[in-house]
Length: 406
Image 1 (cartoon, rainbow, N blue to C red):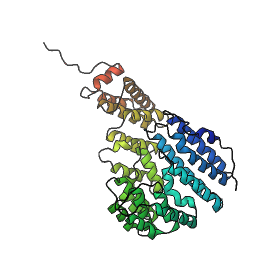
Image 2 (image 1 turned 90 degrees about the horizontal axis):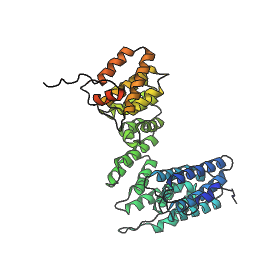
Image 3 (image 1 turned 45 degrees about the vertical axis):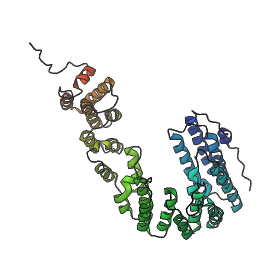
Image 4 (image 1 turned 90 degrees about the vertical axis):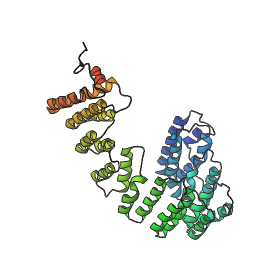
C-alpha cells in the first residue's frame, strides 16, 4: 500500500535545520506540521498516519542543535507526540504497513538524541493496534532487557512493557519488574496498571507507593492514584484524596480548568470553594479564577481577603468597567489598598494613577463617589507604607505633615 502526499513540513525539518536560537521558530514549525497532518486526517486517515510517522522520524534530527533550556521546546515536542499517537493508532491500514511504521519509529527512538520523542514508548502497545502485533514486539524486545543484578539502559525498555501490557501478558510484565530491585517510575507504573486492569485498584496504589523511589514526586504518585480511582468509577475518593495534589498547573486558573474537566459533576462554585480551602490564608490567589467564572461577588470578597496582585486587579477593573461597574470599582479600590500596603512587584506611578482613575470612573458610574473616596483616603492615609509615594504619584499634597521642631 503506497501512501504518498506532498508534505510541506518535509523540507522544514531537515537535519540540524534549526540553529541554537531557533526554539521559537521550531515550535512554530511544529504547530504548522501538526495542523497539516490534522487537515489531511479529515480526508485520508492512512496518509495522515504516514505523515505522522515521517514527522516523528525527522523531529529529533532537525532539533538537535537548538537550545532547549527553557523547556518550551520539550513541551511542544511532547504535546506533538501525544497528538500524533491517535492518528497512527487508528489508521485503517493492513498489518504489513503497520509493521513498517513501527520499524521506522523504533529506529527513530534509538536515534532520539536529544530525547524529544521518548514518550512514544509509553504508547507502543497502542501503536501496535492489535494484541498479536504487540505480542510479536514483546518477543522481539524481551531478550534485550536487563538481567538480575546488572543494568544497562536500553531505549526499548518502556516499549517492551507497553507491548506486554497490550498483549495481555501481564504475568510476564510483573515478572520482568521483579528482576529490577529499583525500577524507575516509567517502568514501575506498568506494574500498577496491570493491577488496575485486574480490578485491584487499592493494591495498585499501595504497590506504586511502596516501590516508588525517592526521586518519584508525590505529585506523580497522586496522578497515578487519581487515574486509577477514576478508571474504577470512584470519583469522590479520587477528588478527596488526590485531585488537588495531582492537578497542580502553572496557574491557579489552569488548575481549576484541569479539575473541572475531570470532575464535571462538581458545580464551578463548589469546586472553587474546595480550591480556596486548599490554600488557607491565601484566598486572594483565586481572584482571577472567580472573575473568569463571572462569580463577581465571590471575586470581590477574594480581592479584599488577602493580598492580590494589584496589576491583576487593575486589569480586571479595566476589562469590566462598562458591564460590571460595581465589580470594577471594588477591584480598582482593592488594587490601591494592596499597593498602599507594599504588595505587588515592579509597580510604577502609572499603576497608581490607572487604579485611581478606574476607581473614580466606576464610582461615578454607580453613584458611589463618597464611598469610593473614603476607601481611597484610607489607602492614602499616612500610616500606610506607600502613602507618600502614592500621593506623589497622584499629584496630591502629603497628609498631616510632621510639625517642625523649634
